[in-house]
Amino acid sequence: MKLKVFFLLMILFSGYYDAVAQTQTLSEQERIARELAARNAEMQRTIAQGFSRLAAIRAENQENIRLIRKNGDVSFKYKPALTKQDIEAVSINPADVTQYKEFLRQPDTGMVRLQNAAICLPESQVIQAVGNCPNNIVGKATGYSFRTNDYKNKIFSDIFFIKDAFSTTGVFTFGIFSNLGNVDIETLTLASRGISQLADFQPPADKAEIEKQVQILNKGIQIGDNIYKTQTVAVENYSYVLRTIAYNGRIMRNSATHRVNILEDDARKDVLLVFRVIRKHEDGSLTLLYKELSRKAVPRVVLEEKK
Image (cartoon, rainbow, N blue to C red; front, side, top):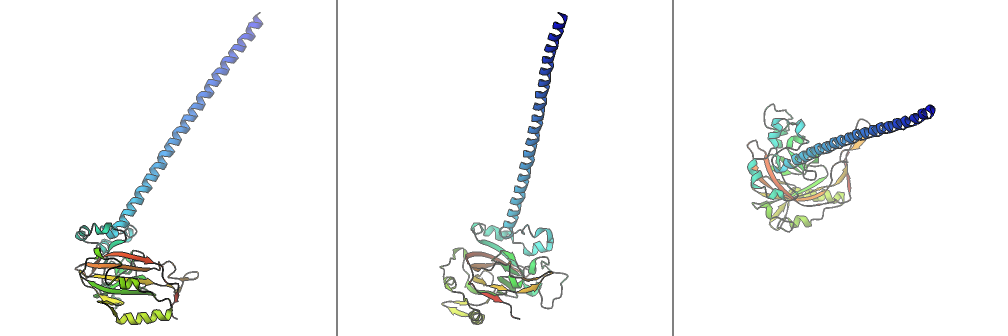
């Protein structure tokens, strides 16, 4: 009898310990599950915070890039390398930003301040210890590419400002200007007088013809009331039309390991725009207000550097 009771008690205690063990196992699983859930939630919060920071940085950068032309600020990509003098030399007057605020809401519009190459890029190549030239900006802000919306040196620019004149000095770039007079560029379109003639111009697709056209336009050609030339005098409060045709080309230079075409990464486009000289600054620089009217591919001709 005692033996039977003993075995019965063993069976009962065995079931009790199994239940306790199962309870402990379930409790451990729940604890692990809770820990995993907490870790996952923390990871999700970290990822969300990371994306929020990236979004904020991206938004800030986009705002800064937008501000380079529209609110008188300097593009984010420039800021780390620019001095106070550099920033001041390319800054837009706040009054101009306010005056043309609505115009600048339109697509393909902007402002740019050009320094005078006669002051900032003197032929003597003497480095000036004093002055307002932006020494850490490409080309000292004397040339600008409307194709890339950025300052460029002479060989990559669509417009170059020296003394009292604009010209196109970009290599294999055919620039044609016309002075439209004191007209409001906000009303100008491809159909406007003085612009339609240039919009209808068919750029030559042959090297010999290109050279011929350049020779003609160096002297100037009159169509109706407008004169078209490869350069024009810069006058405050006057508006201009510019068609800049950057032909594809090859200019080979030696790199550390091989020869490269320096025009390979340059945007070669046919762009027509209007711009207005809205301010002449005390340092001799000019602020331009502009609007792009058309952009298209260039003729399929590849020009090469003369040996």
